[in-house]
Image 1 (spheres, helix red, strand yellow):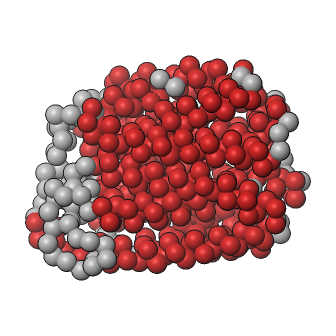
Image 2 (tube, one colour):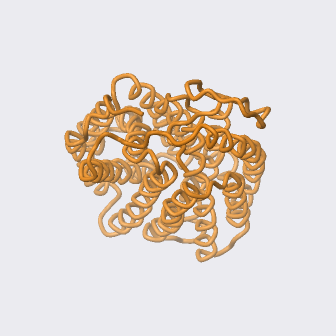
Image 3 (spheres, one colour):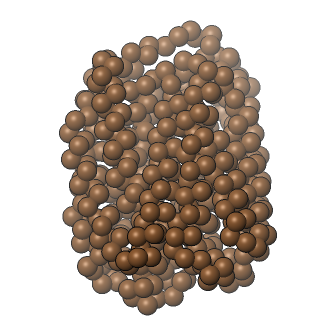
Length: 410
């Protein structure tokens, strides 16, 4: 399927239409997939948000906490490139609501299971839902972008980040006081997501017919095969540095605050919410800025530029730890939309596959890092892993090897 740069112009409320203008942003569609991303990632964020409760209820070690994250992230990552590659050749808009159905099933299990093994199974099913949702939803955001790829990808990604930020807050308000069974209330959100994504899938079906009628698009990125490969490897390294550090904060920040500053679980969740809210804001800003000044510049500043703050964080008091975590979230998160669009521009004929690979790497690196860091924390300390991961943003120096794509846009 050659849809890398096509964007149909049709309102979401009336999904059947044959009139498209690739230069116009179809904002209702972008907003719909962004909202669905919010619901999807809010539900997923419930899992790490209730780790302290599960640890106490099931007497889990940090290694077991890491394994729960690993199972979720691995199932979420391994399937994504395969789903994206398949849908590049055989578009399947129905995968959008189907992914949310998997998430709903996993959520129901998470609310009722009573053993560590079944917690792992529930986590795996939620991961399958994520791997089914992300590649196709990312493609839809690009289809509806009207050429403003950074803006559309930021809107899509910020939905997910907003959901990740709201997840711990709602978990603290709903689940922590009432117990594991209260997770069932979040099933309502999954059902809403299924309804919205069903409407989006109908719009996409009509879009493909109009795109085919327009004929093939230019798929030359202006680079040699070796240059393209090298650039993709650099982007993969940057995703590694970003998401291993993010895994440290997302999964163990609450434990770090509780251990070092003796605050309550509820208070630690508020700090986590502030960090994740900053991540959402930074993500939204990064895409449009990349459209204007270039994605390479955004990637360079957002990853390498955050290194001084990550190095200072483990030595700060509670107030400054909160301040620095917010700044880190704002700056570091601005990179991912730019990275995704940069990768899509490198492989314009394989949007689904490349989106699946990079979202898969995001989940995969995060999951492996969570398990490894949990094991390291068991034999050292939570503070130690924060000091160790603080050096990772220095890998941002490798952004210097990325090609300048500003003159190679399609």
